Image 1 (cartoon, helix red, strand yellow):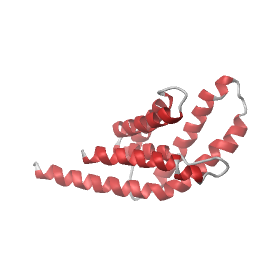
Image 2 (cartoon, one colour; image 1 turned 60 degrees about the vertical axis):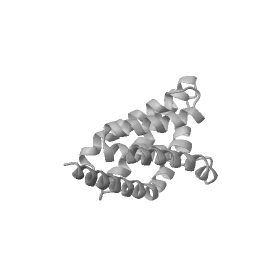
Image 3 (spheres, one colour; image 1 turned 90 degrees about the vertical axis):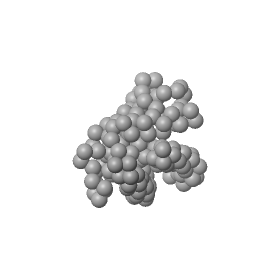
Image 4 (cartoon, one colour; image 1 turned 135 degrees about the vertical axis):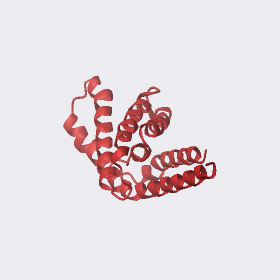
Length: 172
């Protein structure tokens, strides 16, 4: 139960930060995608199921507040969380290279899929412009924020795992 409450608080706090604080810290209208960081992090730290669930709820918030229709971002973030969860077997908390690479790839794929499904299918074919002015700067900004946010998420996850392990030993 504590994990569910903590993850819910993380999702809400990151969403509020992304919409308010980072909205005012935007560079050329670009803000980091904290929801990608959170979805990817919980995916490769906890596995496919938790990545999928965190991605669904992060995407659902984005759908409710910013989406044109309900379910697009939820489905996209679910896939991102699930794919990142596939890497939980090779995840080591001490190594930050894998999380950085996965978050970069997740943000790039998120941007490209959003471009294809929301712009290109409507006849807007300026992919190079969109990639260099929106996708790439957002990815770079997300990397910088990842270096600050990821250690906090990792530390909270480690404390929750230690608490769950102690609690499980009480029942044995």
